[in-house]
Length: 205
Image (cartoon, rainbow, N blue to C red):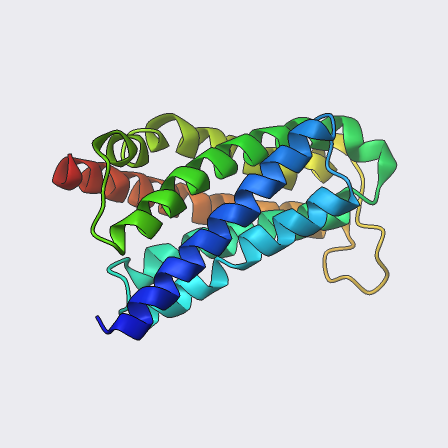
């Protein structure tokens, strides 16, 4: 790896860490309710992960392209839905617990991950941080998926539809079909990614 790529990756990991830290602080100090400011921070923090797919494609990191793309895509979809659903006040009671779950599951995971990756570019890997990176996922990954699904099924729970004209998912039954397809993809990818993390844990620890 060239020095230019190394410094770029260290800068990327540091910036991503900062955005996740500022987001979770903003979310907590805001009373565990997402507002316009914290929503913007979440959009940026999670949006930065698109670059990780590019990093994997360019082989700047060892992460598999497929699993990286699947995880980033699913999270971006959740963030997109949060942006849409939070504009419908009557859904807040159902949506907010989901936002709380994903906020903590994602933030803790990413703060540990990005801090370890940042230090690793300088060949520093504290044992406690390495352990946290490859152990916290055991609880946080299933927890995060639970929160993501609470977001997806909010319209089903509320029995409502999208309030956006021209949206391809405006029909309630159409949305339920979409959720079914999404569920099938999760049933496939969750075990794959979870097993991958266990293999990584065995290799690293």
